[in-house]
Every structure is written in structure tokens, then in C-alpha cells.
Figure (spheres, rainbow, N blue to C red):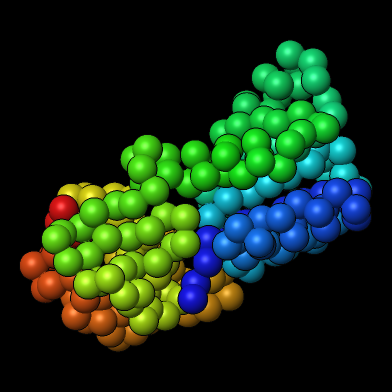
Length: 221
């Protein structure tokens, strides 16, 4: 099962491990990194659903790190930090953050903030996105459910489905899809994309995903 993925940057080993274990127990895939250099490299290598960043870490600070990440990722980001001035808060949001939580914090509060931001990406306040009477997408578990059973989707098929669900009724170019579905060190393949589209249509119906000649595709909801 493909889970929603989180990049956690926290140089306090005990806190980082506690947060990682808690979030993994609640169904997330978490990569815990300790320096901004490691985090930046990982952010280029892998598509994440959310960034959870400490500010005062070895290397560039979390603010500058997020500015660099924003050049290629729009995934929501939360700063976790002991900094508490209004100036720091303004700097955090200016760098591209979606939320800010001050240390010390309750793990349950962090979880609620994560869930809220992930639902916002799909423009909903619900944990379930209804597609039709047979199928829905569970945001929390990152699963397509068809007739009560999880669909067997590959990693890139799930990324593609999320992209469609985040942009319903909007034409998406091949370039936008390649950028969102393939990692930076991979070569996009039109043949592979057609295969992923074909597999999604098996679950959702051909009419749900429209081909736009010489441009891309559109998910109809």
C-alpha cells in the first residue's frame, strides 16, 4: 500500500524519532533527516506529500531550505521550531510555509495540522473524495477504494491519480504530468504514461480521464 509521504527535518534525534514513530503509527511514510543538505538532496530525489521542517538545523536554516524546495515542489510545509517572534513567523510564511507549530507541541496537534493541510491540497475538508457511486479516494490512507476494496495501483499510478484529483476538470499538459509523476533522475516515457492512464481507466472508467490531442489529459469529476 502506498502511503502519504512526509520529509521530516529535525536534528534533535529523540524528538525526530518520536515524531517519526508517531506519524508512522498513524499511517504515514516518514523520512527523518538531520541536516538541511540531506533534506534538500532527498527533496530533489523523491516526491513528498508534505514537508515538516525544523528551522535551526545544521547547514542552511529551514527558511532558506524551503525557498529552495519551492523551486520544484508545491507540497505543503509546516515549520516546527522554538522560534516565537512575529518576525520569525513572517519569515516562515514568506519562505513558502503553510503552517507553523512551536516547540514544545502535542503530537496530536501536529497530526491534526498535517491532516488538515493534506485535505486542503484536494480542496476538501473531508477525509474522503467521492468519485462516483462505486469509488472514492481516502486522503488519510492515500488509497483508491473501488467497490469497498483498495485498488492495486503502482507508485506512479497513485501519483498520477492524486494529480488528477487535485486538479479536477483542468487540462494537464504532458510536461506537467511528467514533472509531477517522474522523479528528477528518471526519464519520462509517453508509453509508460499511456499505460498508467489505461490502468486508472480500468478502475475509474474511460470517460473519467479524457485525452487532449497533442496536449495531455483531463480528469472529469
